[in-house]
Every structure is written in C-alpha cells, then in structure tokens.
Length: 500
Image (tube, rainbow, N blue to C red; front, side, top):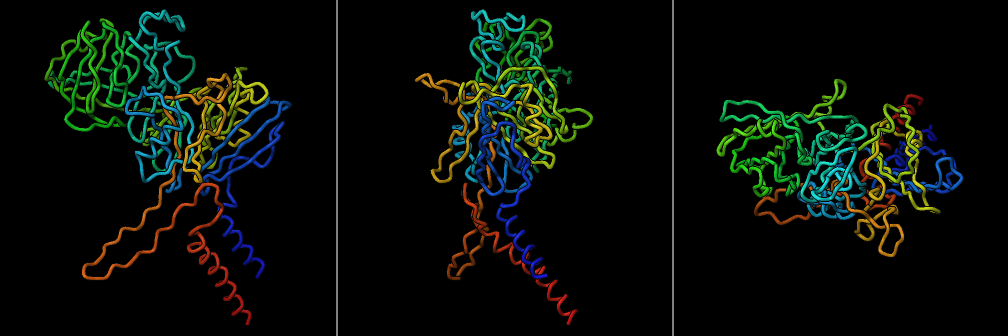
C-alpha cells in the first residue's frame, strides 16, 4: 500500500511539473530521422526540432514543432499584423516585439508567419507594369498593395474577407483556421457577407463584394480603418467616404452606421483612410450605378455576417482570431492526397485530436541542409506528427518561426529561411503580412485595499511564471502537493484503522 501511495504522489508531482505531458509528437522516429531535441518554452509548451537525413523518404529536412493547449487560461493565441494598417509587411520577430509593447500583460513566447498576400507579380497588377496572371491583364492598382489573401481576424476584428474572383483567378479554396476565446479551433472555408443600406433613401440594400481587398473592376469593395491606408484605386473608381462618430469594430453580427462626408468621382484624388472612417470603392458601370445616387449627408448602415457550413457555422460565429491559408493537408485525421511534387519550405497550423494546437515550420531550398517537404508528402507526415486537421500557411522565403529567449529577453529567429542575405547565403528573414503569436498571461498580484490608519503591510508576491527552459515546479508544490499527499494518506490511515 505504501508503494502505491508513493507512486500516486510521484506521478502527481511529475505531471504538475510538466514531466508527464500528453503531447501529439510521438516517441517513434520518422524515416531517416537523425536528431531530435525538445525544449520547454513555458510550462506545458514545447518546441521540438527534428532533423531528417538525406536518405529519408521525405528527403533532407529541418523541422520545428511547437505544441500547446489553447484551452489553458494562462495562454493566448492571437493573429496580428505588423502595423496599424493591413498592408504593412513586418517580420515575425518584429511583430512579436511590437505585440509585447502594445500588450504589457502578455509575454509572447512563440510565433509563426501567417497568411499569404496579394503580390505585384501576379495579383496586384500595377498600372504600366504589363503584369499578367491567369489570363488577367487588366490593371488593378496605381501602386503595390500587399493586402492579405484570405479571411483574417485580429483579436476580435475582421481585417479582410477572402480573396474574390473579381480580383484575379486563384487556384484552391479560401481556407481559414479560427480560434475561439476559450481555445476551441476550426478549419474550413468561411465567407463574409456584407450588406449596405442607405437609411436616408429608404433603406435599399446593396451587396458588397469584399472587405479590404484589391480595388478590382466589376466590384464594390469596402475599406475599413484597419485595411490599407491608401487603397491605390485607379482613376475610374467611384469612391464614397463614410465617417462614423464612434470607434467601430467589424466583427460577426456587427451593424455599423455612418454619414457620407465626401464623394470622389472619376479623376478625383483618392480619399485617405483615417480612424473611424469607411470607404466604398466601386468600379465598372453596373457597380457604380448601384451607389451613384448616394449623396453627401446620407446615413449608411453596414451589416456583417460570418458564415460557415451547416456543420461548422456556429463555431465560426464565435471565433475571435482567424488566419487565412491554403491546401488543407489533414481533415478529421485523414491525409488528403495531392500530386504536387513541389519541394516547399512552409509553415503549417492545425489541431490535434485532443484539441492542442501545433505550429510547424520547415526549412527548404537549401541543398546540403534542407530540401523542403514535397507538398504531396506533407499530409502523411502531418498525420504522423499527430495532426487531426491542418493546412498550409504562407511558405517559401516567408516560412518563419520565432521564439522568446527568457535568458536574453530577445525574440529570436528559430529556423533558417531560404531568402538570401546580402552576402548571398540563405537565412534572411522576410517581412510578412501577419503572424500568429502564442503568449502567456503575466501573473498579476491580487488587488488589495489598504485600510486607513493601519500600518502598511507588505503582501507576499504572487507566484510568477517559470522562465523558458526551466523545469522547476514553482508554486505547484504549495498548491498541488498537499492534495496529492492528503488524499492517499487519509485513505491509508482509514484502512489501517479498520484493520486494527
């Protein structure tokens, strides 16, 4: 009996200290695996580095996997951009630093790059560039406009709707990964429905094409104060400026009202974005006609509905962080086959069967170091890692993972990107349109009210989070051990008394 009690106590202590963890990464080695190391970034958050040799069926690879439980109250997952406007490109390392400065109650500990964006060599076809993509040669913008490709939501505010067919053809679905405030996750193809009513003119409704997208022809786009500062619309655009007298937030179910303060017709200078402003941009005769009778002073009402499928609609309406991506690799635990033999360094996000989230970043395009996984091999590899659902984020030179180094206090690049530095060698970190950041909530002292006319008493400090790399149990011993000891000991004493 004594041995059983000791075993129960030891198991409880080990579990509390993070020694026993139900992580998805299996103990088995992958084909051709030559090295593996695991680091604890924070209690219950691990980063595993896997090296596959040249003889592996996957090829020579360098892969990093961060795994954590998003339902924990002391962890927070946030999708965020690098600046005040959605078209700002910033490195993941810098985005972590900016996020920490803006959120003093949170400590970022790991991050990966997020969504793809509309590039000038294909989608955002600049006037005079002669760019052609997918048979589209029409000019779209007056200058480069790097807005996200997919549906993205930053900490409760919808930043962009999915890429539209009006902008340019796109191969594949407009997939997205969403996270609710309580840590539930969903992977699917949600859409954003946007309607506009002119309340002054009887409430006639106009359906809008998208939010913070390229100012494409044959479309009516809406721009918010979290979209691009300048939408780079061509001279033929018909633009309506709506100013709101409050700080609005575009989210599921939101209804936003404002008044028209300016109308910019063909040839007029593009209006500039500013806080609490919306801009309607219409191109194409049939689309301009839908809003041509709007007048300065009219009150407009905009409604927003985030929609999923019959099976996942409810959870999409609860999510507060969404990142866009492409090519679903695993759904409901099954690898989805594809014949793409492209060797692709990339970042991947998804969930395990028990609800954990895994960030994965793999290097590539570097002979002798890492080839990059073939896209057709990724589904089976991700199933082996333990994914239940996952998809690709941006890749190529954008594939980035960064972690917080508690010893130095710096945010550091973990992987070795394929972009070349000034000396011609790989390893240059690329600026990206958004990043996904995992943070822990910094412990705060309990608020106390000091009574008057009583000498000041120094309160005991609140327990602090363990720094990265530390294995200690901290305050776990003071809270967990009494319970682990008391219960089995009480049972043992009761049994002994009955025996006597």
